[in-house]
Length: 218
Ligand code: C5P
Image (cartoon, rainbow, N blue to C red; front, side):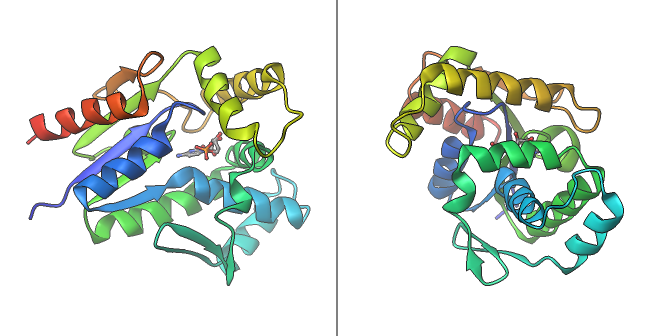
C-alpha cells in the first residue's frame, strides 16, 4: 500500500493528540506525539539544571540522550516516562526548552527518521509547516481558549483537586502566546492545512470529520 503521512498541528488543548492517536488506530498506522519528545527533553534538562539557552551544553547532553518509543510508550533510557511527562508543569518546561534550536533540530531528526519507516500520523505545532511539509494531509485543529481550558480542567481536576479554572486558563493563554510568538517554528497553520474549529464538536465528531477528509484525499 502507499505510504501516507498525516500532520496534525494545533494549540494546547485543541484535542490533537487524542484525535491523532485515534486516527492512527483506525488507519492501523503509527502515531507519534512530537510534544512528548519536547516534554522528555524539557523534563531531563530541567532535572539536570541546564539553562535553556546553554546550547553548547545541551548539544553534548542530547548527543548521549537515548529516547525510545515502543507501543506508544516513551522511554528516557530505560525509564518509561509516558505518565510523568503528561503533567502540565512538564508541558511548560517543554515550551520553555523548545525555543532552543539545537533541541528543535534533535526532535525533528527523530521525527523524520520514524516517518521514513512507514505510514504515520504525527501531531505537534510545526509538523505541517516545518518538520514534514511534504505530508499528504495537514490538519490544523483549534478551539476557543475557554473551551480548551475547560477540556484541560476536566482532565486535570481528578489529579489536582485544588486547581482552578482560572489558573488553567492563564496557563493556556501563556502557552499560546509563547508557542505562537517564538522566532523559530512558531505555531501556525500551514498554507495548505485544513483548519477545523472544534469548539462545539465532540471528540467523535472531530474524528468523523477528519476520517472523511482522509477518505476524500484518496
Ligand atoms: O503538545 P504538547 O502540549 O505536548 O507540547 C508541549 C510543548 O512542546 C508545546 O507547548 C510547544 O512549546 C512544544 N512543541 C513544539 N513543537 C511541536 C510539539 C510541541 O514546539 N511540534
